[in-house]
Structures are given as structure tokens and as C-alpha cells.
Figure 1 (cartoon, rainbow, N blue to C red):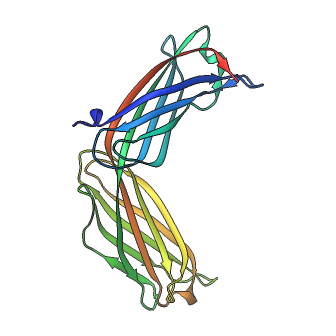
Figure 2 (figure 1 turned 90 degrees about the vertical axis):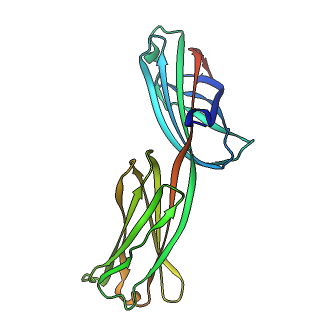
Length: 246
């Protein structure tokens, strides 16, 4: 089953909001999404392009939504173009909305924790492959501990090397880190996300900026990662009357 046939989308409702005092309107409505594959999808990326009857682009938007869609169920996603001038339609009585939706599965891994011992400046970490699903691999993690500054604050820099072995883009790779004190209590957390191209090795970085030097002994760094990979693609279109509702 190809990406184009593994997901379906239908515009359930669409209308233009009555222009406000500044002459701004927006497209509102719903898209119904279903999956035709036996798997759970957890991220949906929606690209919407609104055109007048002459084909000119009036508005475009992109949105990412984390949700859960299981086989046999359906998911309702808001159709929202953002605000634009009602005069952008000119004399058009009709408009058209083109929608592309990508559905992604999530592969999660709790990565090996890194202990910092006495917390002295230096480089810590590990260097072995941790797979996330079949295509994404976290190859190594380096944790750099910097000397304390004049205020007694220590900067800790994390760099994870991630490889996307597939022929498809990973639209979101999420990396989270937690600083755990010797007694087991979390004292700080940081996170980031990146887009990883097909076949790309990428360094994903986060930092703790101001952990006090007197808390460094026995500190450990816990990390986890989630790779969202595209599993389904759907396109939908709809003609819209250029009339307004309140």
C-alpha cells in the first residue's frame, strides 16, 4: 500500500467567517481523516492552500498536531486558513481549498542515562546504536560539562548524533533531557526537535545553562527520543462559495 492510499481525508464542513471591522475573514471547517493501515498514527501535518476562482493564492497555512488515530476510527482536524483580507477574492464568487495531510507514527526510546560522577569538567557519554523503529538510529550521545562561571553556574551541553537511514524525511525528531540530582530528584529539563532529511546524519543539541556547581556531584542526565515517520498521505479539495457567515 502506497503512502497516497494508506490515509484518506474528506472536508466535512467549510465556510468563510463574516469580515471583522478591519475587513479580515478566515476559512473555518473540519477535515475528517481515516487510516487504512493497521497501525496507530500520532502526528498529523496539514498544509492548506486557499485560491480564488482565478487560481491566485489567497492564503496558505501549515499546522502540526499530535493526536492518536487508530484503525477503524476517524479524527476531526480543524480547517483554518488564518486571517486574510476579504477583498483578496476580488470579484470571485467561488474559492477552492487544497489540503494535504501527512500522518506519522511515533517510535520512542528511553536512551541510556549518563552519570557525571564528581561532576568535574569534561566529556561524558556513550557510543553505540539505539534504534527508533526501523529507520532512525541514535548513534551516540556526548555530554560536555563546562567549568563553573563566576556565579557558580555550570553549563552542560548535550549532542546526540542521529541517522535517518530511510529515503523519506523525518518531519519531527524530538529529543528530551532531564538533569537528575544524586537523590533522584529532577532539577532541570530541556527539549528540542529537528527535521531530518533522507539519509542525513544530524547532530541534535540541547543545553542546561545554570546548574549550580555544588549540585554537580552525583548528577546524571536522563534522555529520551521520539522519531515521527511519515506513514500515510492524503489530499482533499473543496469548492467554497464566497459568502460569509457569522
